[in-house]
Image (tube, rainbow, N blue to C red; front, side, top):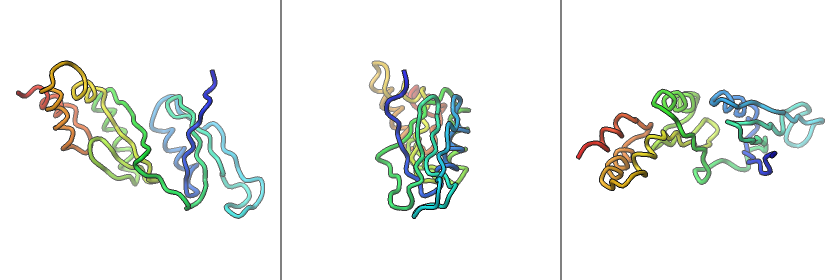
Length: 161
């Protein structure tokens, strides 16, 4: 079944660059179509990218080059569930290292201002799963002190006690 809803991300004329970066992050990702201005217009010149359709980890998105009127904020973010520390590090370093910024608890921003949550599955398991409330609390409290999530440190905190 074809995807019925496509999230559209607003960019200040950098949507094509962002889409190309995003699809480099995850498997099953690609730029599907770049719609270019057929003529000069108030926002762009002829041939400039207006909309970029792309697939990110199997999910369809569109990047709209809408200009400077709107900017992203933390009310919407992308969460990537990672399988291990190597994947967590790779994604974090790619986003932060390419003009992004660190935040807390596994959150970071890319250079276009969009927020990402790089979240190890193991963190979810330790902080929110199981019947041991003390273990969950220790894992959660350890996470609250971190920027990039350190799975080994979360595991050690959960096991302490």
